[in-house]
Length: 425
Ligand code: GDP
Image (cartoon, rainbow, N blue to C red; front, side):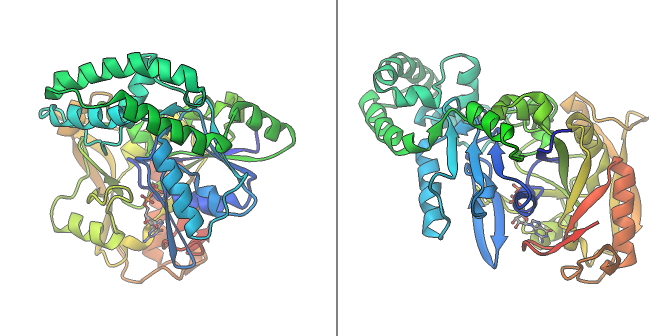
């Protein structure tokens, strides 16, 4: 097997991938983001200092690691430049260690407007998007009217193409809200400036990664969002617009499928989701509120409160299967301290039938009842646990039950947000 590794979320995102990626980066030479856009928000806490990364790979917090924004990412130039500036201000060294694919697709202001208009006009079918234009950017990529970063840097071509694309977009905007919203001159001038500012970062990352692998470099592929938000395998249509599972790695990073490497799935000790969509184990009452507060479950990008629920092993098994997950990292076990009992959903009840597989029909998923196995909880604070044997026996038993329920070994247990709050199993 290749010595690379892909780190992916096995739930609806916010599993704590940022922390695990940061932890694993030590063993790798290159970190590559392969999908999603600035809607992703990975939080890494180092020495009490909090970094929130949106487009820049989490590996940037380590010196001498090459970080790559892959071709599968929806690339927003002003937000990228702002993020780089913010990181530099926080003392992070960014010089030749950050590269952007010349094949990544560019997010434009009309993508954001269309994102928000689509969501607002869609009262029966809101997706709960962050409104950052990622979905419409991917739509344009598929509809073959998007811009690769390479086209943005080709000044003459860019100005020509923007004319017809913007005309089309302004027609769409005016159909949805009755007026032409965007000026060609403003976008052309603004993006010409961005082009010059991002130019030093842009390169042919397909060739770069091939060369790196040839010289023996190890690559870590960083997933954003989670597998249950994957465009093909998630809870359609309440999903992101990209392949958030490891299936997206070859296409989104620009490497051959054989180089995906080990797949490490990240799962929280409970489950959350942001935005709309079915959520069989959701806890809407006091218990949900408690998990939200204890776990700080508010979006890193939007501040939106996350919906919280018991661990759903049916959903995670589905995610582990499509990813071909080799092992799991379990995060936020500390958040469950103080619960009298903890629950794992092992199957769903649906029309007098027991379902052990995650249904493709999202409407059906809204109607299922979770079937739980119930385990005793623990009172102890566990943030100082550094060995499995430091955990209260109930917490240890819960981890073992999760492993059985999802048919994966847990290799890492995270017991706090700091880098060292970790147990290697
Ligand atoms: P990501 O997008 O998957 O990286 O997840 P987020 O960054 O949105 O959310 C994870 C949040 O949980 C961040 O605020 C992390 O600092 C925090 N976190 C990660 N692991 C742990 C853990 O084991 N315990 C606690 N209490 N917080 C954690």
